[in-house]
Length: 61
Image 1 (tube, rainbow, N blue to C red):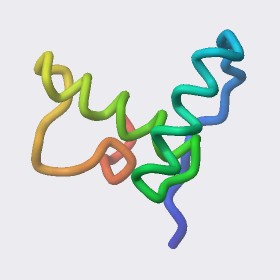
Image 2 (cartoon, one colour):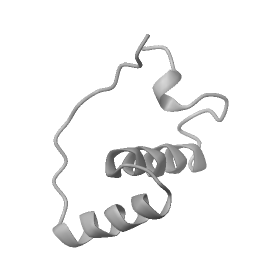
Image 3 (cartoon, rainbow, N blue to C red):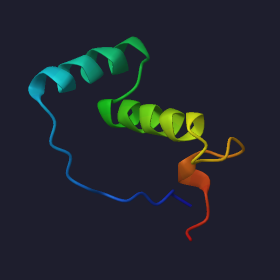
């Protein structure tokens, strides 16, 4: 079964998008996957997300 994801519009400056685009290419990811990886890492670092499972594998609350 495919993982469900919440869709939303994100507006960021073009310069910031360029940073993420280059970073994503360096890590062989899409820009979308890079945004998700950075957000998950940030949420884990501050204790908002458990380390056991990625955010996309968690059961809906």
